[in-house]
Length: 297
Image (tube, rainbow, N blue to C red; front, side, top):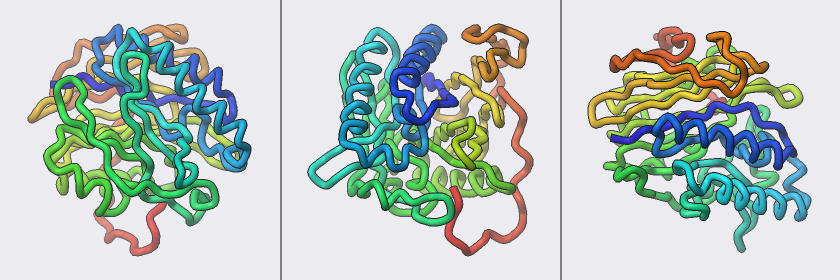
């Protein structure tokens, strides 16, 4: 059994200090709720998408220093999985880090880089070439970033047998996107036999709107927990071999939760059934044939 916190956060592009401070606060709240790990969105350290900021070496250095600060500030809390810009001899990577006990315990570089529609990640990043498995709360976990989940193959083909796959996202809204995500995550869950914990960003950046809607997908393709749409949300779920249940939801967009609490408060839920919504339930998946165009994550 693993307690997983979905940190559906609205980060600000370029505000490294502000993003770290908010994630440190949310990590403390997730720890208070008994989480073993909290997941934050894709490139949450820098805000998404950082675009040409990553072409400035000093910004990349500052982002790496911010990641180290977040590790130090969350040292006494639960594990953290967070997106950042990594740098290796190969170049810059859209990456995920596992933070534990004040250190960067593991790194993963996004394998699949989208370069269609509003995405031009190949301009800034080089793809990773390997998978990353870590152990959290006694369970084996696979790391992935957004586009990695949209097609079969690496890294998911290496994650058979893990308890769950963490998939952190910066996935913009468009009409029908919720249906597409559901189809994609159901395919990956059935392929791996693992829970898929999908955490998305929320908020806006230039012409992009991020709609949240983070979800937990069971190995049989059932959505067992979901976060709010178009609103910040902190949801804690218990992942077991046969079910997951939402135990906590704290909404903080615009300083007010849906329960009327002030920002920073936590609303407890006594509901413990296998299907416990923490936000508006997604509409049923479309029965229409899937599109054959390039995926829009």
